[in-house]
Image (cartoon, rainbow, N blue to C red; front, side, top):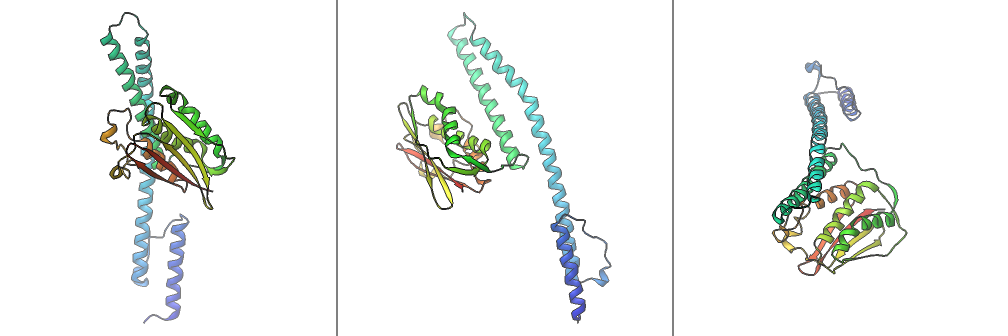
Length: 281
């Protein structure tokens, strides 16, 4: 049997091994196993495996970062040219109705592809930790009024009225990324609300959270699809004819959850949808 002194020495070595792993220090991998307990040997092997896996993950992140940069760089110029040439073609006189239709379709598909690539790059950067959210004290009023202004032109074309009552609340969130999340939600509300519809944006304060609601009286979401709307690339068959790629709500959820918040959806078909975003105080 091991004496108390021997057990104490083993415990000290185990404690030091774990501390080294936590602090990112080199883990000793040369031992005289005849003088070590089986537990020490197993723990050492496990920590070395963990260290190796961590290094592999970091290498993979670096490769993904490089790949994302390449995709963004290589597609930026061709897409910009496609959008420019389609715009120039649409300004040409003497085009037949059929040719105008083709030019409009090229323009729409180019913009859709640009949006898809941009969204994929943003999502990948978030998922791999290349871009991190950094919550700081910001005005909720400024966030929401800025986002409302961004979608105002689209809402006006459908004569959709957006209401918001200011609150003077401040909260900790990453302004740029949270604005991206709310734009995606509000843009969806405009897209799936019929002409002459209404959208209400409201804020409520709770003990630990602020709840930010975006309520519309649009087409609604079927109950069995509500849990799917935050899935990447998911699009309901009911809106398949509408423009979109099904990544906006997925990205919104990723952004909010990375700040310690969450999103809920409540909807009735034909009556409208409410997206509630909870941001920690």
